Length: 153
Image (tube, rainbow, N blue to C red; front, side, top):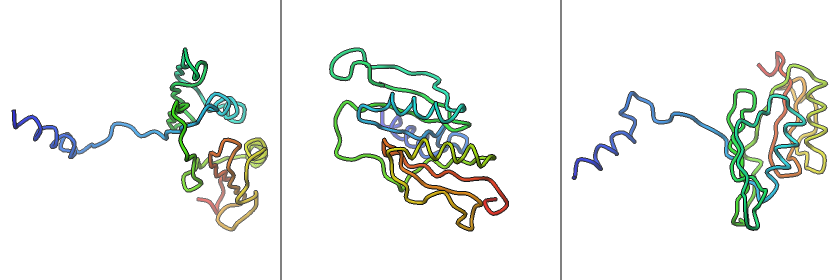
């Protein structure tokens, strides 16, 4: 019986082929607005694909997002509405960094996402990128939008 906990610790320590994680996803917790946020992001980014979504089917949370698995370009997101209300939300210290090849598409995404949100850094050339902007959307999610270019490489 004493060997089982030791074996579990060895596996958790990464002794199984040198890997400790099988996948990494960004987890976005909303408090009732996950469905609205998903619809907004899908309207801005064709690459924002909901792979699987489950809704709450009863109670105060009926119709709210219980769990959504999203593939955004090559990045995995897990999105949900939290049943308990928390006295915290998103922080701008963590943001989704999106690179664009086209300045017009970047500007359009910035305009849509920043509507009713906040803009810590308006679209501009800040020296490290030919066009960059940082915003918090109406749901509080932080986005950094960057135009690929020689300065941003």
